Length: 309
Image (tube, rainbow, N blue to C red; front, side, top):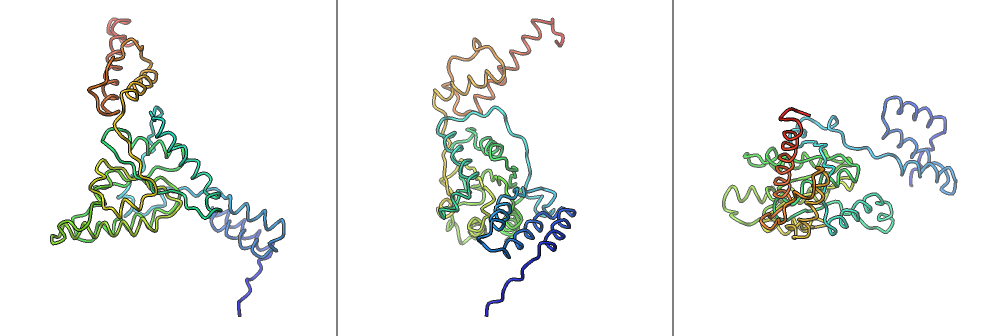
């Protein structure tokens, strides 16, 4: 015999809701509303309206204060995000599509489709993987949490796997979870399995595979690497999107430089005529920043005889 759910009275619901609001226990607040609505006829307009309120409750974004100290030492929260981010057309299209998907997750759920929340950015160094991950965090309006690979990897056998489990067990609320140089943890298995290092690598990869499978769909994991070739094939398959950020073309170098010149308020007359010797956005940016500093210094010296303006 199936036990009938106890119907929660309206008065009891109101008392519980006020209590939970007073003590800032919003999860229990919405649970009380949900329990009350379950006691109403599904055809009731009040049932529909209450369910809609529960479904649309504000996201509980992750807060570092809520994370235990043993996990805090494995991550960092960097709110820095550049205002001047250069995106080529294909990258912008991919990011726009992801943001639209995440903000309309309910539509995908209706069609039994899982949102893509495991993203692998790969490509040569210096072409914006970390910058783009932070930019995605800003566009998605989600906290940016970065995993500290140096802190996670432990020389004691089994400790690295424990650290991985600890992070994924605790990071459950909506955020961008960024893992730079993810190749430090996801290298191919079966290489040097007779050695302690080889066995430990296999143990680490097995641990990360399990945790990727049970990653909360509220968390967006972005991994970055410039060594996709060393990654374990099963590890790579776990990512919903593998996106390569290649070295910029000559046209993209020029567009990037013009955007930088506008941002730094520099006259186009001093912009270099060729960027052929630069292989990445970071190299070009470093050169342009040096150029900008020299221009500002020359301007100060010229207009004020060496005194600050």
